[in-house]
Image (cartoon, rainbow, N blue to C red; front, side):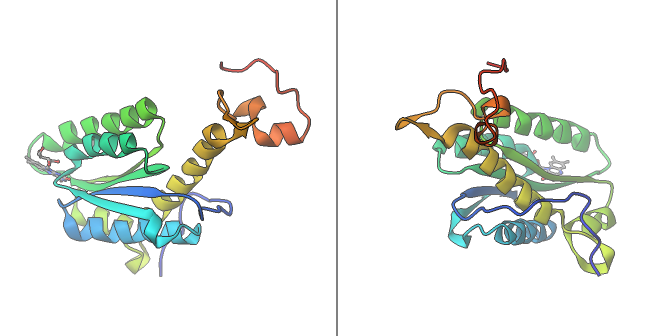
Length: 194
Ligand code: RBF
């Protein structure tokens, strides 16, 4: 029996969404399970299998660089960086772990492409298995990461994808600028971030 996910998602229509998955070869078996979970999560949100692009990197440290290149390609609506870091006897774990989490956030905000943090940081293999597989009461977190990518891709599309009088909208359609607010007749001139 699989454990329940700790996060809930509403119904998401990812039929027009393109997702990029960057995955490590380090801890290959676990990462492959997580990638299967990401694909399953995307499929639940109606993402076409052909709209999921997967590319390998050697280890987690390479994920932010690859994510920046992929974001700059402009071909995906969201990216999942997927890897597994297992604490060893040296300080590598701490350094790589910190650099990767900061690097991923940096790419996400710097390119305005949502980059999902799909990296497990575990003390041992047992902890990894509980989080990368639905077997033995575990939960494959990849499923949540796939859905997170779709949700954030749709948010980005709504914010930047809308056209006004045939021209791309200049401001993000968030907050009082959002489509939902306009429909409800809210004051779209309310002061916001911009
Ligand atoms: N990469 C991972 O994705 N997961 C790991 O658990 C991991 N452990 C490493 C431990 C050591 C001692 C070293 C030197 C590298 C490790 N890497 C790991 C690889 C790292 O992310 C990167 O690919 C290499 O350091 C090359 O930049």
